[in-house]
Image (cartoon, rainbow, N blue to C red):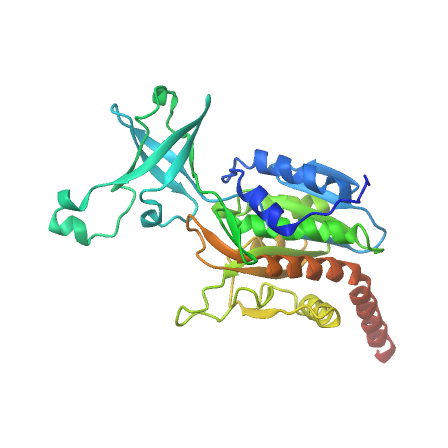
Length: 358
């Protein structure tokens, strides 16, 4: 490993990574930045054929992987009009009405061009139009202010031009889903570089989760791990009636349900108790809608857990997260890996007990 005497500030990392565009399938720049940050804490880094970044802290014990998707939702140009207007379609789960009047960047082969999302003024809408929920047929991007707007091609990506900021331990920024989890893994790698552990740890920053998650599966396959912890965000909108009360600032949420391994989750909860890391419970009745669903099915199966960072306003131009939740997630990851040989020992003892009883 390289020199590890680097103090990474969580808030600065969050703002740094959310400032770099990385839509699904186009994560290269953000992964390049992540690799430079995490390199001092690992023995090697490599890319999978799907483009995911895998960094490894070598060890002689059980293999565990931490997974966070690095991609973000965005748009793609679907139509170009002669007067400098564009039509869009979403890459991932956008609600079109949240982007009206936002500044955007159109990413062309010759560089970025400025655009603004427009919408028909209320004065010009019919009564019926005013009652409709806006969709992609009703919004457009004005790029006519650019002399070279004709450089734009069908299929070019479009990202929002929103700048993150911090206030009182809270970050407001785009793409916190899921750069917050990427930061949690980076901080865990920093901590584990200072801790003696037998486990071999794979830090996987995966691609294309927002369109199905193939990047995580390839990362898990090539790593040949036995244990995997997927880190993503979950809805911290606790004031919405009928939703689980997951709160921002109250610690990471540990999922329980059929997609997680019970004994592995018990291990994580024991670690949280041992180190006084406050956690919340997130019940999941079926598939999780995260990379957990992909990782657990890799090869003959992976013992998988899901840890989620509470977040408000998911898939909006500005998402909200508590810095402390990210830091507590990092600690929970690091100590869960450091104590992984304990779960291996317990399982071997249980196996011996069964043999003696035969």
